[in-house]
Image (cartoon, rainbow, N blue to C red; front, top):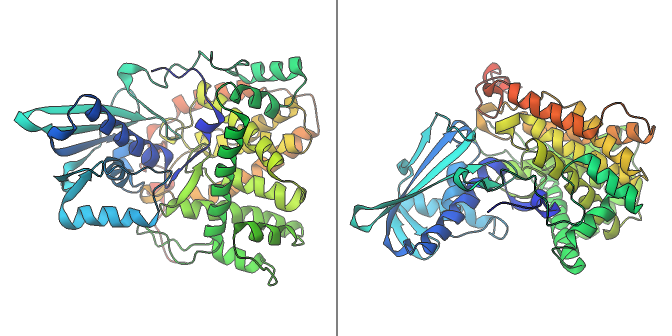
Length: 473
């Protein structure tokens, strides 16, 4: 199946952390494997399952919970709806009893030794995995998947999600930024308005609003949970949660709230001074990514590793710049951010395993910059330039997670990406004359990704991942 268009809802997906490519993608692959077994009438014949992980999925898979994600997918759970507290219960049951409940319907024996971490890379993509079902009569059924960033999966032989040049599903195709700008000029509309027209070709406005409200609610809840959670992040690095302490220092002691809605109202009534504004933005971003690092629910925007940037910048707009803003403004923000991400996805990559962290934090910063620029009254040209500025100053950013965990330097990078997005928006609003186009910087980013040494592409074989000797300081 070849995808004809990339929706905003492909770029902004609700899921579970810590990684869209290493957690959400493998989870979806496992779900697809179950569907294949059913389609081929093989489900009832399964005796057990073996899993092979390759390349980046192998090298940083344990730190990104790739093995756990596949087992959760094979167990019949969905990352959008699974109660977070059930994750440990399901994995604990498999570890304790050696039994996997396949799709929640068939109990089969399973041991974690049946997951093989192969360091070699498959030819097609850095994130490869093969799931094999051992069947009755000594037969087997195998399927190989590639997780290509942002929770997208593909199978090489079908070219799913590979060639995205055909965008027939939209009345106003947006393969490149220049096309989007032309549509805006021809229709005399903002970017979000053109995107809405495209989305209406597949959904009703009520459905669009419902999905965007759900996305915003998860974003808000992830900030809230992060700001109210103490302790240490899982994984062995003993990284202390920082958002809680940052929030405690910033909050007004008169805060009075019982839920996320009243909490947001309380923050919007708080007077913020210059330095505090940036501290709040950093707190928002770090809160989201601490939830992400803890296998919590976040919005992939466009990836889990960069999930904090867009919520932080949107919260900046709501709590600092426009206290009267409500869902219509949130809707415009997310529509504009989503389409900018789709152009990066179509013409480069949003996978750190393919392009380093420039493909995650860089893209999310560009998405947020464009969206904020529109909310501040920027023209479509200025919005796209805001995205260009944000990406231009993330070019070459490596992905070098220590111990393969989405913690150091990943969490802090979200706060930096959010601050850069705000600044990029400011710079773009000061001019209508720009030397570098968004399409040009996307092309440059892709060339940079191809030139980048593989050890800086989410393998934990270079950079901070091998240079830092962690000490408690």
